[in-house]
Length: 197
Image 1 (cartoon, one colour):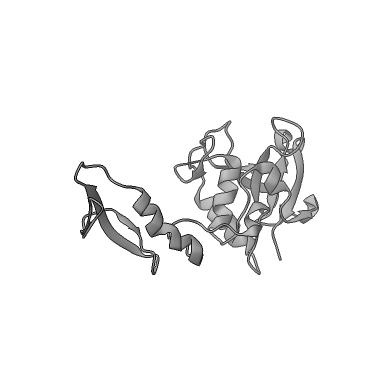
Image 2: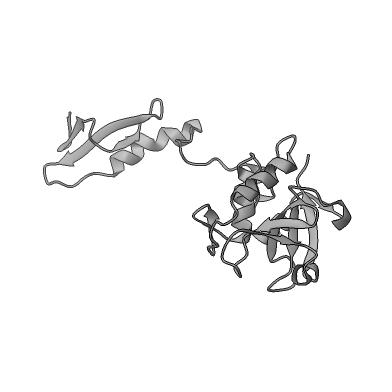
């Protein structure tokens, strides 16, 4: 098809763009006689997606609850702690949020996400999620917070039962299990939060 000196070819090997009718991938290649590709045509072809509210996959669709933490109707704390334990030995990585490497809040965010629970990314924001839990009532799956590098919550871990927790500390370089009764952690403990509905 030729329009104003530009040719449109249907070609399965070309780059996918979104169709204006159904917002599904359509393969087009645009070329001019001078070899310059006209990107304005692409904007016109993709504008219907915004108008229909369609969000192409795999782009995430954030929810209003994701900024403050959200939870399904029930959370199995034992399943959360079990998932956390399967990640022991994974490396620490500043800014990491996947098994290739975790920092403390990336670790908790990843573990809870495996169970459909959206946690905020930052430790201080995770500290605002859920309900406060007394130390004597800690249960598997509770988030535990510590002041390690500054006042207020700067480190987060997941309770696994007793006085034990699993976390991604930078000091040891791997996800590991610790005890709240250890002198270092006992004096830095700030509190816990439980994500339940």
